Image (tube, rainbow, N blue to C red; front, top):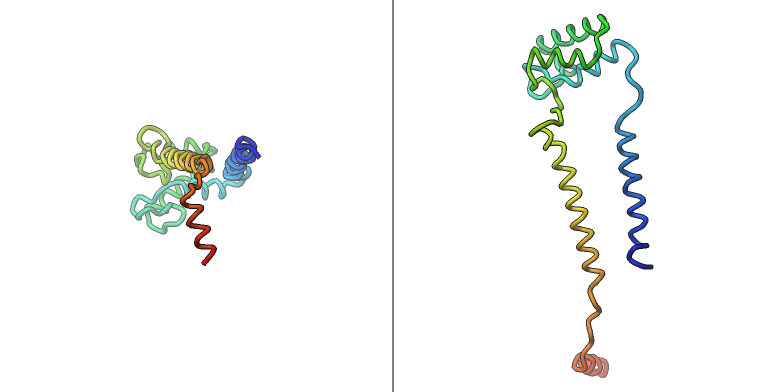
Length: 152
């Protein structure tokens, strides 16, 4: 099997795997009930008084107030993006549990991917180098040593 044929399954399989992961991570349909929308928004927002806890998980008074505000706005028919924009405007960008993928915070999302690609490329080059080594030639001295060892 040639080198190109041995890499062909990987070249075909890797994009399919990435596509399957992307499609699978996107999830299902949008929540349909108001309570599901409130829960989803509350899971995206950080409690202002708790350490790295979402508003949905926190029982602090500040989280209760934010959940009530989100519930009121959902009942008024506002879109999720409008509600999140309101909360960011009121509490600042730090209120969001997941940083936006813009500017310097974009590096948080991009650097792991770049590192994984570099690691895979390095492994590919290493495997290619290990495979491409020419076979070592056996000298007459080596043959004589082996023959002598067999006689013993």
